[in-house]
Every structure is written in structure tokens, then in C-alpha cells.
Image (cartoon, rainbow, N blue to C red; front, top):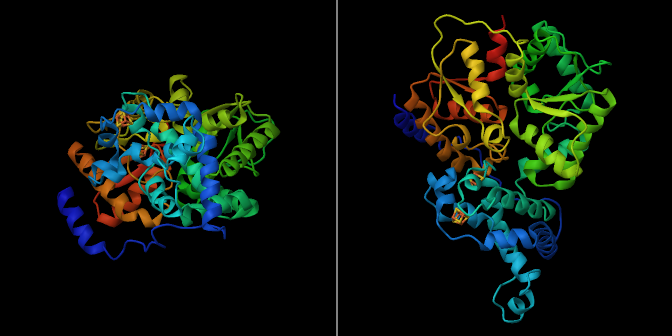
Length: 451
Ligand code: SF4
Ligand code: SF4
């Protein structure tokens, strides 16, 4: 069956399977409409500043960002144009803080943002954006639209206007340090269970380690084999490493949900744990959002370089391969695979696709890539909290349909991804469309090829 047939049959079967949304928007907490508007505006004005406002003004309306955005391209809906998603910031800044703010207010040239507009923006900012960064890459005026959307999310979080499921994970992580709310003891027990069931050593709080490793609550839950694979690879390379019981979950739902306070709290937990362990390097799990939140946002939040090096697990594997400590063997007769290049790892995270390709080469595997790859790769549609947000399911599936066609065009039978958020999105898509592709994480694939 072709991708198009699958999409059609999947849509027919599963229209009723799509998880029921709570509504068109969610409200957290009991603040009044006025208080929400005030909080959002305060944050928009603080975040946007004069420089960002100037950048917004330099937009020449060329439409190139629209053509880059998977949500616009796959729906044709002009509301999903990236620069339109940053509109609340512009409107708030001009009316409240810009040099002509008084003039705009007196003559009523810029209306005050209303609660119903904020409700509408909640969908635009959270349901139709994965923070994939393609719009920022393509804008000829150099406007970092993705960063503006992130700034707008900060205001929405301040106003308690974020999707419920995303808020639930961010607040569980705030309360327990774990996005699934399991807490320290249960998380350590889960690591112990993976170690005994898969016969690998998983050190926890081991003194004199050089490297601290994080996983995520989601990976522990959905992909325990990936956690075991990390342990096998680290042991194979002779790395003196440990998990730290106070920072096993390296994910950062504060980052995707927009709460700066919770984002900082999550980064601080990892930084404190790494300091306590005295390590020189922190290896982040496949979740590329966890990696970007610590490596890039962390430095910004602290205002100084982190006291250790941060590597994504795929980056660690590529470096170990180059150093000759990771030895991989060819397996005979394996079919070509599709390498899905995560937006957050490659485009936003600044990692090198070529280094990943060398891992495939060392395993004797042909890695196919779609026509748009590397920094221009197309998003799977589930990152940035979209996968968690059931309200966005119909929209996300539209984006995933395009991804399916892209994979089918390469002829690959298996998709290999280096990000566990993409992997969860693909796994969900395989189920939703009864798609005949298998999906695997790169770490597991490498562990299977250890020499
Ligand atoms: S690509 Fe840049 S200049 Fe063109 S419409 Fe988008 S934001 Fe404006
Ligand atoms: S970051 Fe990606 S998903 Fe979000 S508006 Fe830009 S292109 Fe669209």
C-alpha cells in the first residue's frame, strides 16, 4: 500500500481514535481574565525589548518562513505562518512600551490584547509550532522567529494559558524532579530493574566518575532498551560514568511549556548534581529538547558557561568512534535505513549530521536521507510539546503524513532517529496509520553493532 493509501485508510479508520481535546484552549490556575492579560503583556514587553521589536519590524512579508513551516505547508492555513505567531509580542510592545506607545494608545491605533486573542494565540504558539527552527534559518532578514515564539510562550506560561498535558508534565517535574511524577526512589528502582533484566551494569551515584549521564522519564518508561544501550556503550568505551539519583530525568518541560522559572530549576538540578559528582562531562539522552535546554539555554540562563561539557549521546558516540574507543562491526545483509535528522539536535542543537553518518558507515549500514536533510531537514511534527498536546493531534497528523511520504520516497524500510521525542512521534504515527515501517533509536542500533 502506498503512503497515500495508508494515510487515506488510516484517516478513515481512526478519525474517532484521535484523542479528545479538552477544548480550544486550556487555562491553568484560577486567575481572572484581566490578570492573565496583564501577566502575559508584562512578560511580552519584558521579553521582546527594543531589539526584537526592531527585528519584527524588519519583516518584508516575503512569505519564505511560511514555506518553511510544516504546519503552514501541510494545511495552507495563513494563521500558521511563522511570523504571524509572533504577532502578540509585536502588538504588546508597540502599544505598551515602544517609543510611540503613548501615541498608539491615545489614538487607539493599537488595541489592547484581549483574553480571546490570547486564547487564539495559545493554539498558534503551542499546537502549530514544534520550535523546529526552520523559519529562522530561512528568513532572509535574519529574524529569529523561533526565539520570538519561545518568548511568546513565556508570556503564555505566566498567564496560565498553556496546554493542559504539557502543564501537567512541567508541574510534575517541578514537584518531583520527574516529568511523569514518579519521584527519586521509583526512578532509581526503574534503573535497577533495567540493569538486572538486561544484565548490564548501571552505576548510580558512583564516586570518582568522570561523566554523569541523564536519561528522561519518558525514555525510562517507553524505551528502557535505550537506557541499557547507553550503559553498554559507555562500558564498551571504558568511560568512568554514573547516573546521579537527584538528576536522572534530564528532560526539561519548563523549556517547552514556557516557564522560565521551571526551566531554570530543571537546569539547576542537573548542574548541582554534576557539581556534586565532580564530573567533567554530562551526557544527555536522545531527547534533543533535553540536550538543547541544558547546553544552549542553560548557558544563557546562568549567564556564564556551564562548569562541564555537555554532549548529546549521539555526539558522544561519534566522538568515541573518531577516537577509536568505539569499535563497531558490520552486520551482513542489513537493508538501508532512513536517518531522521532531528531539528533540535541538528538545526537548533548545532550538531553535525556528517558525524552521525560516520557511525552508519562503521556499522556497514546505508543511511538514506530525504531530499531536504541536514540543517534543512523537515520536522516530524511532534516536538516542542505538540506530541503531548492531544488538542493538536489532527494538525500533527497532517504534518506526519508529509513525513511518511518523504520516508516512502527513499525506499527505506526502517527509520532510525537520534531523538526520542521524534521516535515517540514516529511510533505514534506508525500506530495511527498502520504504517509498515519500523522505528529505532540510534543508540540501540549502535549497541547492537558493538564489536
Ligand atoms: S521570512 Fe522573514 S522577512 Fe519573510 S515573511 Fe517571514 S519573517 Fe518576514
Ligand atoms: S519553528 Fe518550525 S514549526 Fe515553529 S513556526 Fe517556525 S517553522 Fe513553523
